[in-house]
Length: 45
Image (cartoon, rainbow, N blue to C red):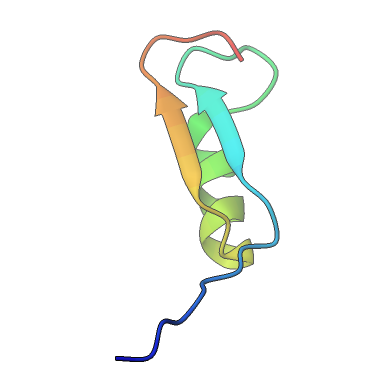
């Protein structure tokens, strides 16, 4: 079986209570840029 590496351009982490940016904007940007998103519920960036 051949192993295949998945290369991501980076990662993104955010909290759902970040006053600097909306969660929807971060989620959309990750979707478009194919970045994995790590979320902390009620986290402030």
